Image (cartoon, rainbow, N blue to C red; front, side):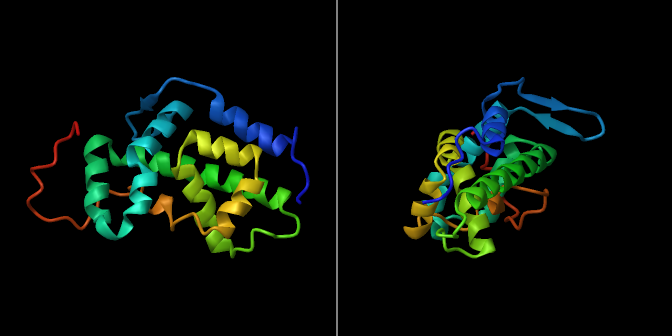
Length: 172
């Protein structure tokens, strides 16, 4: 069993940042975007990673990203991606601190996929994993994660999409 992280500042800092509500979304003229925790988790829920990760072979990733870009501007999605990256890195650090004998048994790349997958599953699963890193080890051993939630977040407005996309409604 790994070392206990109860009261560890690495865990409490992540949890405090994740549960502190702020206002939603601020757009600045220069393209800078500021999003709150609540907005971030709303965007994560919009992607619906639990469903997407169960149907990867049936979903056109470019069309999916295009639909997300119809909902929010690319600069907003870039900020969502930035926050997602910070969250999976924080979760990975918690796992590294907990799993001192590397029982998770994954490569660095697979650990990235594992932690990003957990972020994609939403705030509750993320917080549970922060508080109980043993669950990450079990998830890893069950191969209960997919590559890679972060890849499904649009980072630019270039998608390989068909010319006839007028059927996509901005308010879906």
